Image 1 (cartoon, helix red, strand yellow):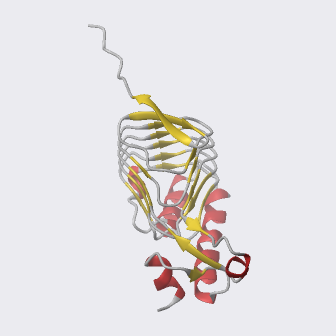
Image 2 (image 1 turned 60 degrees about the horizontal axis):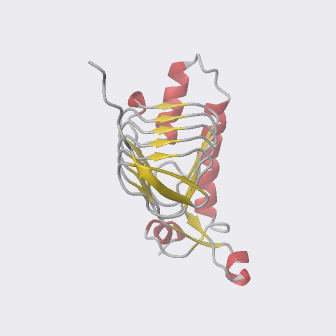
Length: 192
């Protein structure tokens, strides 16, 4: 198996010394650099760059503000109506999936990579990647960090500054370090 095949299969792989993976990351980092240095008013150029960065996303249905950085791009999926605020980082060594109508606050990170605890394997460049899945209609506040293997259920709200280390069910408000469920989301009643 190639290192990329190991990465995509969720096995331990050499992320730091494999020339093919390094080349893939450099290619997409250059595209992110170009996107991040394109004027916000140059909508068509930004859309063309996003199509190259995120080949599996219909970029006409999402809004992504710069700066924006990914590791590979081809492991990212987004439903319609996704909004990523300034300074979003998607470490997509494994799939990162956003459902429809997700709102992500500024300075958020989604990290799929795990590293060995023993120093020899870690220094050898090994890592493993676990997917992240965000359901529909999720709101993620500013400066949230989502860790490898986490699923956040549809309709949930993650409070600003949270570090999400475990799965969060649907329809709840959760926050903290580590992030924990506080209560169900209670919709206000409309006054008629």
